[in-house]
Image (cartoon, rainbow, N blue to C red):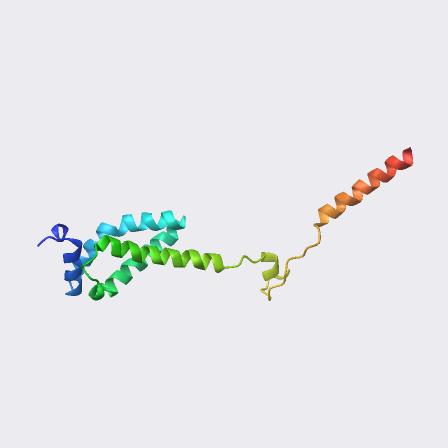
Length: 141
């Protein structure tokens, strides 16, 4: 029986019985919609592709636990959504560190040091030149 004609529930039942082609049909049906859904949530295409693959891995290994009481599309989108939410939470926990604090001047990695708060050298030079111009203007009066 061609897999294209089977419902999602029938494909999952066939997957549980070891039919790899049935699962390939599930992936074929949902790969693009799930990837697009994840991309809209994350705004990162590569991460969306990775999480779509993780979604299918989870569906495959949990196929025996799937209950046909619910629509399969609801089930797979819930898995994808949970993975995206976890990724968003990870992003929020990550701290941005100054590159100057992570790499020493000789190019070797060091322990984190807070960035230098002093003004840049060119800012000091501009201030010095400005003071000289003002001093000359006052002297010419």
